[in-house]
Image (cartoon, rainbow, N blue to C red; front, side, top):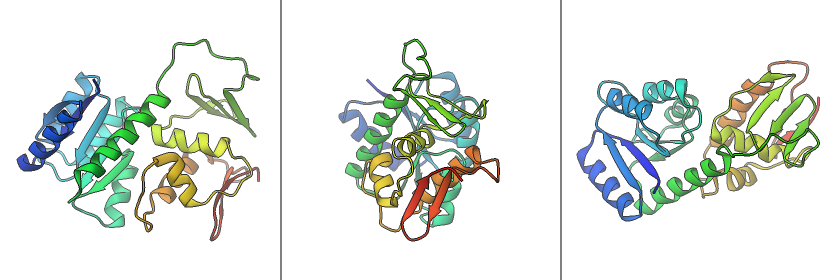
Length: 235
């Protein structure tokens, strides 16, 4: 049974989400303030965090940042009544993997939960010996190397730490080198659920990836193709 923690201070929302997810077979823990939420996540092994932004004691953005200091892999789904692009970007930049704007339909929440858990399972550690560099599970592009068994990412020999969503996005680029990929294709492949057409989640995560991978101005790998999407190619 997958273990989910819900960090939310509105009792009616907690009751609604907890009851529905339990009926769908999930084990649910609840924290009603941000500080307690951080303590519970640090003390337990959860498969998913559902996190409200407006919280007492510590807001959701700070909670997310604290969680990411010690746990880069647990998926974090933001719940927010603040549906502007700026607030959504702030949530993602703090380390969130996905967001859902209140009010929402429960079926949409379940879809997001299943998608995040599926991606987390695909990116989880596997008990297997690290393959040789020519193994089909090792991807190399320029001086970037990704081992899809150990989930280790390096560029020019330097380790790079990625969230589960950043990792899946990078892997999608590596499986489609030199190909111009549209935002719609990326949304479908990486998020696996239908987003609003105007969402900028792809642009936000591409920027995250660029900041971590493209520290060298003269050797960038991820390029924008205006009006079409993005492409992984050598400069």
